[in-house]
Length: 207
Length: 207
Image 1 (cartoon, chains in turn green, yellow):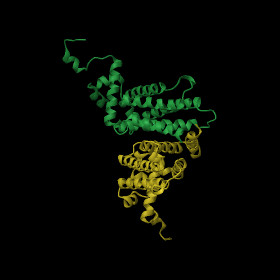
Image 2 (tube, chains in turn orange, purple):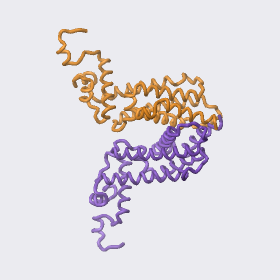
Image 3 (tube, one colour):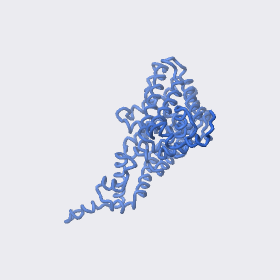
Image 4 (tube, one colour):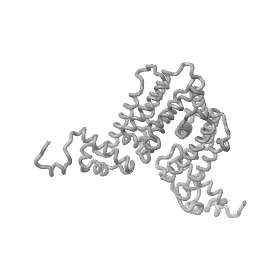
């Protein structure tokens, strides 16, 4: 959309539909988080990062709390969608070993594809407001529930395993892998992590 | 030791050898941490918790930073001692499955016996100063090194396993167990966690 007053337009930042503006501001907030941590996440910092004025941020979100909640909503939706994509529908039986590998692969691929979304959730939680921690914990509860369901559906009924603790263990393991991938991608690329994980699973067959 | 001036003695707090006083103050600091978190760990709070005046704390430690470092030293020594007690000396071969169980059991027993030492390290790290995080990380590096050594010594040479990633995984798993034990001891008592862990290890043999 052309205009004959480019200077005036720049002063108010490029016009943008509200939804698009909000996405852009959330992306800017993620960049601020990744670079400076939760303690520095202010309206001013987000506005500067997005190259807009503070009122543009206030028009889109009304303040830092609604913006943070919107960011949490988006991150939780993405994390849940990535997890749900790996969960077999309604108790469909799967080859458990194969699923354990594919699920880990899928989650690490999601982390690798979108590190800025995952870093503030998995690595940069220091100084995070309680709302962030609560949201992370509730997403983990959801994820563990999915994993426990898959285990219940697919474990040999004679296998007397505490699926709840095993689900905790598996989620903690994938979290640790994701943290390694985010913190030291050169030392711990996804392929290395998955090969080690496959090796651990394969030990069962070899011993 | 009796005295004819009890009132005067109380004003300066019970006399105590310096080493004993320091231990007492570190224990008081741990109680403050467990109850109020890192943000509230001040000389005043520690003095109040120990039932002494602020100068008593300054005489023993000179300030909050030396006190915090002494606390980190003590915690790291205890954690390292608990870990070292479980490591077979100089590459002595062990039954790996049995060792994996005994090591987890030993570490969880240490956590259960002394939750106030472990809580600020494993659970209450929010708001911890960078020195605390660095110390936790260096202890974890040490611990992973021990585990990797035991794996290297005891794995079948034909088992082509990435011991470094496996050590990361095992330490992350025991950390998660310790957190569950500290956070929800009624829901996740040590016995339940170890039984589930043994079940996971035993799966190898059954499939």
